[in-house]
Length: 100
Image (cartoon, rainbow, N blue to C red; front, side):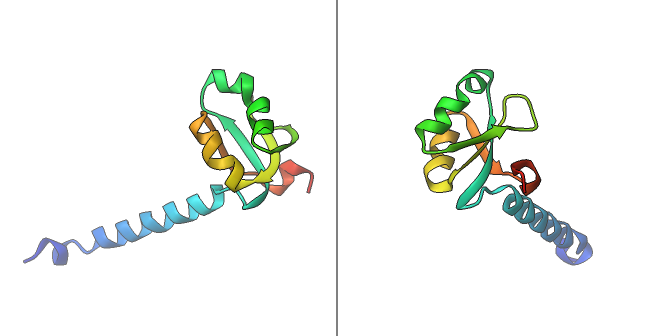
């Protein structure tokens, strides 16, 4: 008997994990243009997060819900990769954090 036939639950688990990862990624992916939460990945970046955001065209919206985080508005194409390379992660910011 083949392991694939005797253990069909592996395929179901794999498919379930793939769906969870895709949904999680789509929820966290910042919008093409709009509100984003900037999360510094190091203590050094927390100290320079405002300058980094402004240097890449972001408009400051306020402090984020976690220490060192910042809510900004901007374009994902201008912010996401350069900030990630600098040690700052940009994720989608829920509307409630942005005054909506």
